[in-house]
Length: 78
Image (tube, rainbow, N blue to C red; front, side, top):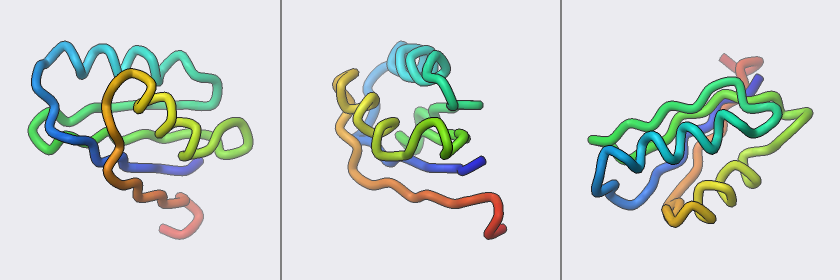
């Protein structure tokens, strides 16, 4: 499993959280997706044999939320 944090532009409404979390949780390989409204970031945990951070970021962007940066951290390195 790999963890990734996607920094987004400022989120403007709480419904953004539900939209992003619901969409990401339906992707094969994504174990968890949590949006932090105040810090405008999305923390995900996923199986890197099924999906990568780039595709998750593209999905977030397709929802209309530009990704400013991505930090990827493998659990093996913790």
